[in-house]
Image (cartoon, rainbow, N blue to C red):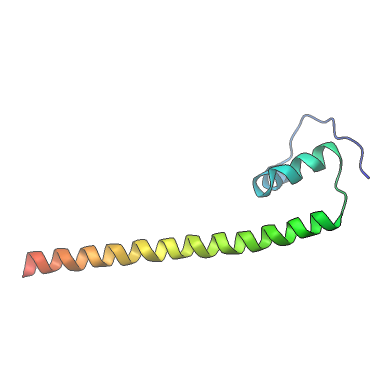
Length: 81
């Protein structure tokens, strides 16, 4: 197990770790990283969650594109007749 990290400087790699999961970042800063079955289960959960978030984000973009196309078609129909 790692020693307690008393260093007050946060590395850029730690920022991405914090953004991914603040609790895991805090554990690694204070306790060190210990691979447990709960950590593995949490990692699997986070990966599945991120896949769902990416899909939702893409569907959101598709929805906005469809709305814009519909708006343009309605506007064209009103202006051209």
